[in-house]
Amino acid sequence: MVASQLANRGVHDRRVLAAMAWVPREWFLPPHLAAEAYEDGPLPIGSGQTISQPLIVALMTQALTPRRGDRVLEVGTGSGYQTAILAHLGARVFTVERLPDLLVEAEERFRRLGLRTIETRLGDGASGWPERAPFRGIIVTAAAPGVPPPLTEQLMPGGRLVIPIGDLVTQELFIIERGASGLTERRAGGVRFVPLISRLGFSEEPWL
Image 1: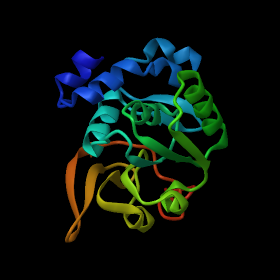
Image 2: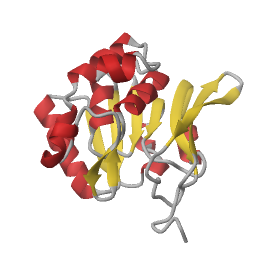
Image 3: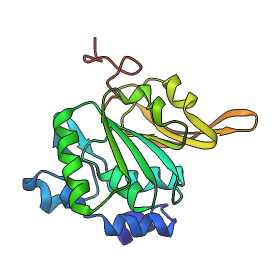
Image 4: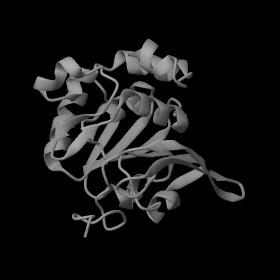
């Protein structure tokens, strides 16, 4: 996976490549999908959610540029795979998930892997985690129609937010940085994520 799907397709950060090689992706999937863990695509994890394509996980992690000791907010724990990658890179990860079953399963995986720099919370991740702010990095693993204001408010100077923005069909990855003169943004290509269900994202029935 690392050689054929990542290193040859724009993932050049050696630390990110090493983390992707270390974290066992099959641990983050339903047992009947374990044999497909290293395929080049997303896979269902239940509750209408997915584990992202390995390439997208690596590119978003690389865009975030997490350093050891950084405080990172993750919106959407899901299976916990992205969380584990960030923790393996040395970040202190604060991850928020709205679906309790997924969060319980992810917490068990973190324990099995011995990852102790992860703090979890059940709730609306689009509101951030004010009590743990500010963050040097914020990563959103679901697509929003726009950037939720609490996330930029909780981004520290020099920090970076990586988030998919768009509708239910067309989305782009945005990288937003807080510099001395305010927020700047750039686009990093098309992506496809499940919708961010939140009062600051999509409704429970986003097609209505």
